[in-house]
Length: 251
Length: 83
Image (cartoon, rainbow over all chains, first blue to last red; front, side, top):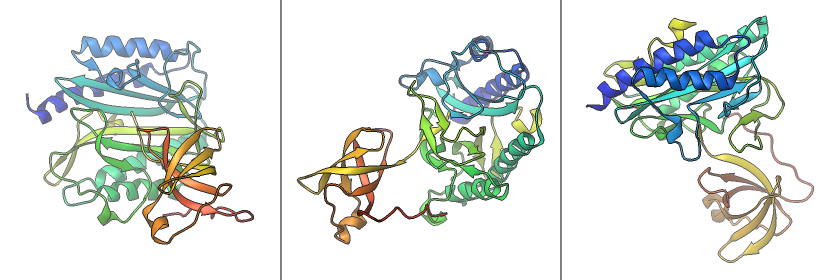
């Protein structure tokens, strides 16, 4: 099966799984329950788990709470409380290809500051996806994310990046969330490339610490963090989101 | 799942090794071996045991690093650049 077709179908499975998880992520459910539900959902839809193929990682999802940024291990049985900022990152492996998606939401009662924080990420992701087209550079994606997040007064992380996705979950190019160099020095975007565009940003200082489990990465100052992510395929004049329904549709 | 790119650390040089390599103790007490970045070699920045250095590490090898900046006693690291 050709790559784009397999990834489009895989993306549909993942989109559906993410949509279900988005609805399930409510007050009272625990990360472990979500993990088990994800496994069942992916299996029922005919996909395989993607993140378990990462060396050393044994879970289908990464679930982070409040100041957790990425790679949170979903083994906690403590239910979510009202007001928690929950990030769920999930991947599907279908017919030899990976797709990757994530969402962040506030469970239960939210506050205006948390709403604004999540809105910044959605706008950053939208602006980033808008510049994905052949002829542009990866640096343009970084710039779009960086500028949008900065305009809201938050910061993107430097150490964590988006990535190419396909036969492997993490492929080249690395899509930095901040501008590190001139755009011309970053790789060109080419047609039919598949990219996991992820915007990873924090409310406070973008200094990260690794927790003792050697996976979970959190903010040092304990302020909240969020990740919004889609897998996209570059087309002749732009890009199309493979993980449908997209975040813009489900939120 | 996010990819971990290059990370920045701060450490203190504990020993100068042959071939302009250095043993560096990181702030989290890990000891690693680090080499100089090309620009630092070009401008012949000398590094002595006791100097504080900024270094970059990749997630692929937690025992090696690349020194990108040096400060002597009394100096401080410049504030992070925006670009």
